[in-house]
Image (cartoon, rainbow, N blue to C red; front, side, top):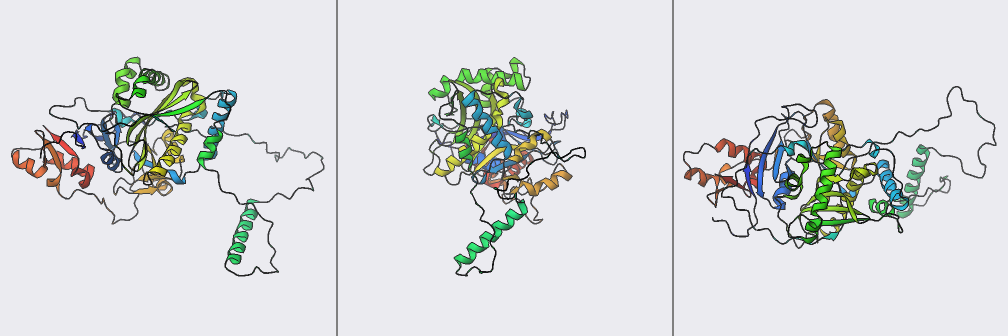
Length: 496
């Protein structure tokens, strides 16, 4: 069949992954291995299915670590956004932002020592040396969404500050005279007693609700006030004072040259990226110039799409810009996909590093996911990129609970707390405990995989008949096995 003008489809070129290259985590010069492909165009559904098989994009380059071979295995991690509860560390970060906005207080510590790795996994920066674009025509991009206020993010995560608590129980301490406990206040109660009281209270409610009278001889504990934990949105709203000294605004801008807001802020955004890369990652000016910014964070293969049951902003790649007093101080690059918000990168003004903007923006992005889920019920996950247990500074992603890791063999998500014991023993691990479970989308029929050959789409079986002397069956089979049968029958693999 011929390519239909304006049709929505995914077109890729596969590059294999035999050569090792430098690892950005353990610094092994030849220990990082991954499969890679160049994506000329990609639908959001295909990318969703690919990241659920361990792939990830860096610009238009899409890569999949060779998990049982690479020095630092990278496991896809996602957070169940609807069940997320901020930790004490997260609450501290939100309070820190509140103090800054309301009073102008900037902490002196540098971001509480949080990692500076903003979801640009090192593997993704290793692209093909040369990409063949000949004869490949990308489909026409569909309608782009307009800018709208929302909420954004990316990360680093703060380690808890060690808090010095006076103990007063040392062997040299002499108690000071005093009047003792306040007789007008109830005695301090242990957590164990509080739990027992709650259980008793629940039991009494159950009995009353079921028509069973409470025994007159029972000695009910004093009532304990049970309260629902505050939602993330409440904490975020509290961090935004009504009459602030500084005003923070978040804008969602589609990554598209036809969008006026994107183009109006392009130069400011590119300059901020360069400043961040040089200050935080030590890049030279040539490594973070405008063309590198565009290649890495603006050139996306994802086609903007809308759906009747999708979010109002549509699907695709976006920049979430943090505006502080009229200037951009941070940008979170995100992909909005059918079932998730996927973080790509975050860059920010180094002068505000102590505000933990990485962690703050991650919390805003979780809230953004929850906001989108109200419009599109299946969009309920927040993908944080890769979790690398062998690299201590990358373990912070596991703090966004509840989170799950992708099993590298069966491609099912497993709660992270069930995965950690295995990762403590070995760098590479299968998380699915069912020994009989396998890849449900395993390649079964290579002949049905689609290829794009001489501007015509055809099954691989038909292509192989046309190219009788072709010796690329092993390469195509490797590619199709990595993307799975379902994607192999949808994605067009370019053949020269």
